[in-house]
Length: 351
Image 1 (cartoon, helix red, strand yellow):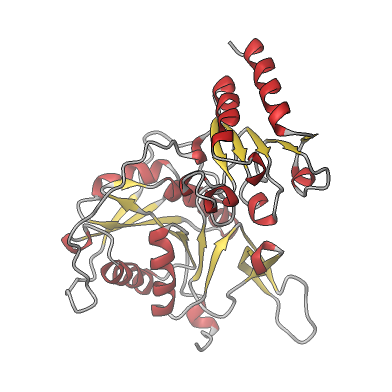
Image 2 (spheres, one colour; image 1 turned 180 degrees about the vertical axis):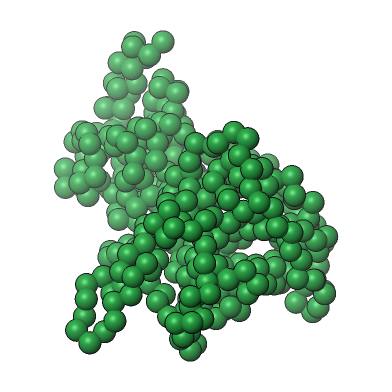
C-alpha cells in the first residue's frame, strides 16, 4: 500500500461515523461514536458526518442530528434492506472515495467487524480494531531525530497481546484514518432536541453480482435478558461462585438493590450463564454506577470491560486476587457467607 502525497492527504476532511441501523432502528453505538466524533472534530476544526446505509431509512436523519451529526449522507437502496457484506461495503467505500473523510469510525459490532476491514482494504488505508481511546495528537508521540513529526493525527489506542500491553497506533501516510470501537466504550452526548443536519442523498448504484448473497431467512432469537450495558447496578459473578445454582445468592443481592446479574467469561465457558451477560474483552464493556465483582479473580481481560464503573466492590477469598487492584472497596472472605449477610442488611435499608 503506497503512501499518499501531501497534496492527496490534504483533500481528506471531516470526521465520519458509520451509523449502524438494523430493521430501521439505529443502534446505540451510532450515538456513542457521534459523541467521540464531535470531540475529534472540535480538535481538528472540522464537522461530523453520519453515514446512514439502508432501505427507507431517511426518517432516521433527525435523530442522528440530535446526537451530534452536522451532516448525514444517506445511501438508500432496496438492495440495502438487510445487511449483506458486498452491497454495504460498496456503499461505504463509495462514500469514502466520493466525499474523502479524514477519519472514519465504525462500531466493533458483528456488522462493523465484517464491514470495517473490507472497506479499509478497498480504499487502501489502515484500520485499527477495538480501540479504547481515540485522540488527536502528534505522531510519532515523541520526536525522533531525522523523522518528520506529523501533527493532527488520529492516535488510536487499543489493548494488544491479550490485553497485557496498550498500543497507540496512527495511520500518518494514508486517508482516511479508520478505527473500530466496541459498544459501551465511548459516551454519547445529551441529545439536542430539534437539531437538524444537512442531508445529502447519494447512491453509487448497486448491481447484484456473484458476491451478493441471497438471504433466505432471518431468524431472531427472542431474548428476555436485560442489556447489561444499560444497567446502573451490576452484580457480577465469576468462577468462584462455584455453581450455576449458587448464582441464586447473587440474584437475591441484585433483587434487593434493583441490580442486574452479569458474569465473567469463565462462567459463560462453563455453560452457567448466556454469553449476553458476559463482561470483559470478549464480552461487553460496561460502566454502571456500582459494580459488584463476586468470586472474580480479575484477569486483565475482565477488568478491561468494567474498570470505568463508578464504584467497584470486590468480594473474593484470595487476598492477592488482581481484582482488588481496581476495586474501590474490597472484602476478603467467603462469598457464601458475605453475600447473603450483605443482602439481608440491604433489605433492611432499601425499601
